[in-house]
Image 1 (cartoon, rainbow, N blue to C red):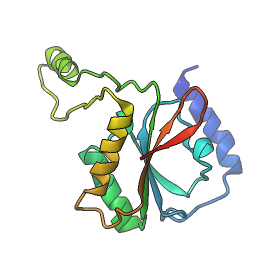
Image 2 (image 1 turned 120 degrees about the horizontal axis):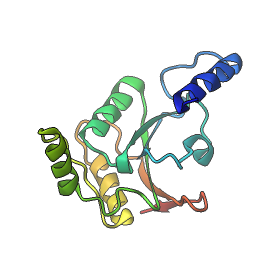
Image 3 (image 1 turned 180 degrees about the horizontal axis):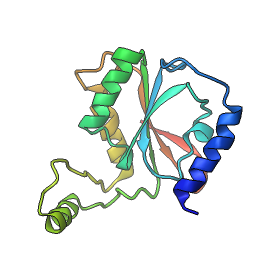
Image 4 (image 1 turned 30 degrees about the vertical axis):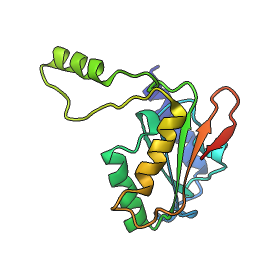
Length: 162
């Protein structure tokens, strides 16, 4: 059985107990931007329930153009007003070589990606930079309540980074 078969079966069990529809407008008016890392259980770690917040994930939790597009929609069309950026320890983007990765993709496919894959050397500096990127984004009407946290994948503890 494949992983996809397993999730299809799990969904059958889940749907049987699903409590029904919720508003598309997040109840907490919160957006969380974080990494796609499978070790991050956002609902458990942040005490969230389905319908509480928008969750935007990518490699590194970096506020790329696409993340800022989604965040602008979240705020302008769905009424969110607070943003949490949650980066984490042992991130695969730490020390990631964007130029080498792009060269590898181009060598294998014959086509260079149109996007960049920014890595970072210091997760704390990257988190501060990410918070500043959101706070200064001109397309966002709500930039006063933006905070950054580092999730420790070994302990589950969330530390605020200022």
